[in-house]
Image (cartoon, rainbow, N blue to C red):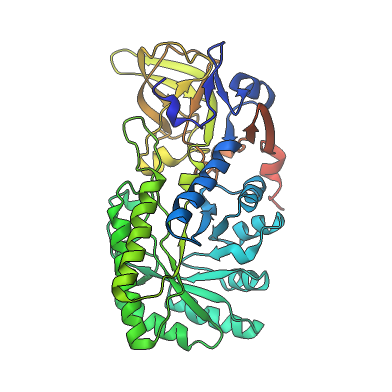
Amino acid sequence: MSKLPLFPLTAAVNKFGRLVLGGCDTLSLIDEFGTPLYVFDEAGLRGKCTEFKREFGLRYAGTMVLYAAKAFLNKAMASLVKEEGLGLDVVSIGEIGIARSMGFPLERAYFHGNNKSPDEIRQALQWNIGHIVVDNFYELSLLDKIARELKLKPKILLRVTPGIDPHTHQYMSTGVVDSKFGFPLVNAEEAVAKAMAAANLDLVGLHFHLGSLIFEIEPYAEGVSIILDLAAQLRQKLGFQLKELDIGGGFAVQYVVEKAPPPISAYAEVITGKVISRCRELNLPLPQLIIEPGRSVVAQSGVALYTVGAVKEIPGVRCYVSVDGGMADNIRPALYGSRHEAVVATDMLAEASKTVTIAGKFCESGDILIKDIDLPPVKAGDIIAVPGCGAYCIPQSSNYNAFCKPPIVFVKDGKARLVRRRETLEDLLGCDVG
């Protein structure tokens, strides 16, 4: 089936014509857990971790793979990342706290963010965070002050904005000059000088991040060249030694049939090749290479399951198929104009013969999950499966319209493991006081 490759690697169709994930019939999953339901294929998650380590490690020994926690993190995912030997890219004390609750070794964590609070910095240092990626002059001074108070000397990287357009959505582009993230190139020398002069900070490297969903590989090579050229200049002027080079993440994934990204091996070949060749040209020692995949680790392994309710036919205009979720559990289509595919999970063998629009249940006209998609005829009670929902759907979910966030299950070898229960009305009321 043409759309099945967008689903997790274990996805199949059983003899009853139903979608199977991780050996589990989706109808059985729904009978047990209800909808909306987010299903993660554990074999797929682990496979992507292994693939990143293998493809980069074969080409550049000692590459450190950090999983970007913002894509999706809970206790089960933190435990899986720990078991697979990856580090973590974290952006809040909440993400650090989740990892710490599962015994994740925080020396393998890198703390990012453009406006870390004093309390977050202090707590991260007290928890012995491995590295802090410093984003601006304010944070540089603040971190040095707090580290002095705690009598600590954390390892830091400086985030530099290389001024590259990665040709992605404007909200996902972070490497351009006009960005809230990082030190502009024109300020990089001053930032490195101040970091080297800070008695309580140990400057070990530089970081850049181009953005998300980057289908072109050349921007990575350009970014590597710019940052290594900068490192060579700073070595000559300031005596700076580049020990770590963090090139961020942003590796693209496939959300729709017609747009496939380059394989991980292609990203690895270009990035590692450019680091090695440019360091040789500049007579720089090879730094430790750090990458930060997030979406590309989890997106394909996550599937959202919904139940069809109202079907509204507007003659000559459109047919709306409403489901029991929407923008509260997946805001990406409304926020980014992103596109997903979908199938009728309970009738995978039927021919797609009707163009419909899958609408969410929330009180917004913009709550459209998928506009104009060809599906078999659907009716109330049918199950819609949307692939590519492993990244950002859950972290960006909300309680809009007092919606109770859906449960999450991990599936493997025919067994389903509930890793987050469905929220209840008591959960919604639990934080209200007075």
